[in-house]
Image (tube, rainbow, N blue to C red; front, side, top):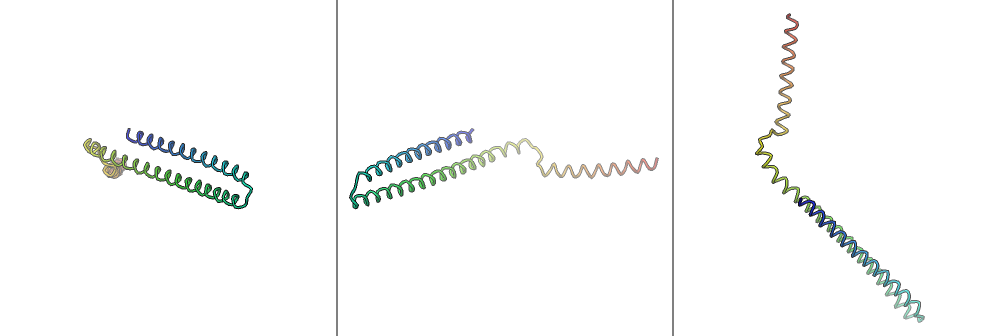
Length: 135
């Protein structure tokens, strides 16, 4: 139950982050369009250079925002994985005493019994074979 709420929370946060990325991308594209329009309106070299600098800055800003968003996504995924591991450990700690209280044999104990039963079956087969030869 805790795992599903954690997963839902993670999905919700990832969805929020995706919406933010979409808004950032849309805003970046609008800024670039505006800058291009203004650049075409400016004919003087010094103004053209200023606009080019603005375009360069806008591109750098977009790249920076994209990198930050990617890091945030990775961080969110890492946090989600840590939460899932913590929930699994906690569930294991709570279930283990219950299983022990049921007084069930361990896998190792079952394996030992299998081996012992196989030895007994071999001895029984050998005894039956000897009886069959004696008869």
